[in-house]
Image 1 (cartoon, one colour):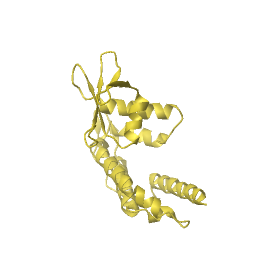
Image 2: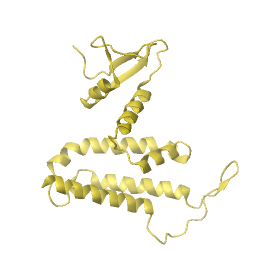
Image 3: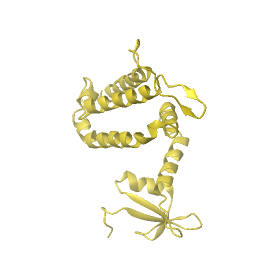
Length: 190
């Protein structure tokens, strides 16, 4: 019997076929996605080299879902992720994303219990902390970019910060998306 606490080991053969070591059979990416949805951790390794290929295959699963129209990631988020690979944000984006998903996972069952007709998102455990964290992230991202001018070979230091005359467009977009989500949730509850 398999130990549910240990990651499910999937070996990739030279033929690129994926082999489930617990059940001794070949699996597909859809099978692996199913294991993950069931709560299993997976580890995919190359049989010959021993390299861990898990990240590569998880990204491939996400890409396949997105290409089939099962979109979860808005284009602006994907664009920001691509940008984060090429600028200073790369250092803190992974930690931010991890903590955000941890809070969402921890609060998911509580959110379902606390759903009400009046502003269901506001009653989600950790909602205010998540909102504050997102605001801090946007502030850090925009402060790093505001006043910086492109130069050959790199970026100059940030210019002296001036008080903002208008609210941050990124924050307004997130607030609008949140309001849209709240409206959809209210419709579902009826």
